[in-house]
Length: 320
Ligand code: MTE
Image 1: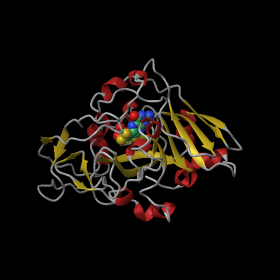
Image 2: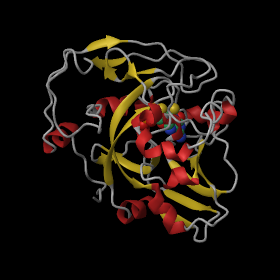
Image 3: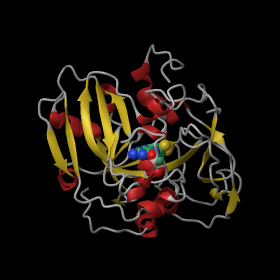
């Protein structure tokens, strides 16, 4: 599917198109204390709207807009108004407003490093060259909340195949836009900007790893990392770097913004793992945004069957 930039589909139309039966849900408000995403200084997680947990008084929702475990996608409203994007602010409920007018055109993504065919892609080229697929993935933040998000995107592998990594390339390093003039959070000296993340090359080539350009059938909004962000569903959300401008194939394991900010708290791998607590909180359970109560966190965020083999023989407590 190619998304014309003019396409704006209201969520209800999108859901109807997919015969999604929306039922009325009683709203309640609950707050759970957690810490900010890796912030060296913990802050309270703000309250978010809740709907009944599946089971109890669950609305009779049935339809295709669920993840493969049968859990419903979060609403467009939830996904676009509860965000981590430290370049703008550490307040999840203010990101959408602060990022609203962030310009994402023109936009280019430079892909280079240890490759035979370095290339700079204009975002229009990315949108027209790669078929955009829908991937409904769970996103589990290291802070202990989660969502189900219907992304649009394409496997990162397809882009890497075009630039042809050399045999020395073992890791992929991703870099977000650096723009302290327009991004007030980048004037915060706590962090080493720009935001950087990395993957091992085999993780980057895995079919679940996508570059996302949209969600709910529309182009990404700035708060979700427009125009191009990474999504790695079996890892904590902070690996899914937003607003990418550079991708490099490298020989050495890259250091990420979080590894530099709090090395004893954030490792390179960041695989979702209920058995490995964060030094300041347990990772056993999570709060699905929109639900009351907490649910168990699944190994590799529920994608163990697809990805556990990538880590065969590794001590996941050591490589956290
Ligand atoms: N990418 C950049 N550039 N800056 C960020 O602050 N936050 C990360 C990740 N990618 C972040 C980022 C964290 S902690 C999470 S949980 C997810 O984005 C949140 O993605 P969402 O706001 O689209 O749900």
